[in-house]
Length: 262
Image (cartoon, rainbow, N blue to C red):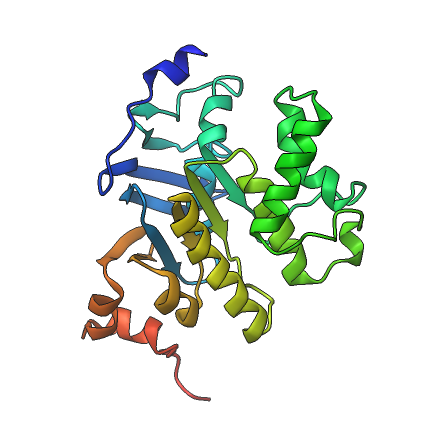
């Protein structure tokens, strides 16, 4: 066990498993995050809403150390991860898995090898163990029987399911989803939403879902945060979001632009 692993302080249900404070990030000359502060509670599904290009995906990448902020703090079970080296991040990434928007599958690997990759990367050499865990993970996402396929032969929804199987094979304590229903038809989107909920209940996992899909938000969210102009503008329940009379919130929920009609 690494020194970093020994420093983790497990959160109780309802307590913050990840605590973000005053996160600042720029890309080029554009300031994307302008002091984001947010708690992610153990066992919840937190949906992060916001405009396209507003910094939602950038925020997610800070939670797993794929980006380092200009300033601010990210605590994972009490461990400050913004100062860790890439090697020190390994125990954090065992706790926090990420499902990227495009799935980020290895095109040269079969479904089986894609899902098995995290186990092999961490030194698992017993192929019987690998096979058992891959089968279990594929079963959880209803993808058994597709293990010999290549990613090019999968539909968009199937790619998302395989990416999710890879994320949960460890399994993690927290799963980060970057636009999990983007580009999918309503029926496939509904199946992905139900899968997110089912995994939360079955694995007691904490989920952070970045989306701008209000249908998904209503179905999966325990809490909702709205990122606006680089800061958290709102954080509360779905019911509080829908009942809000704030014009910024209402415009987003109703999909209404303030641009003048030409």
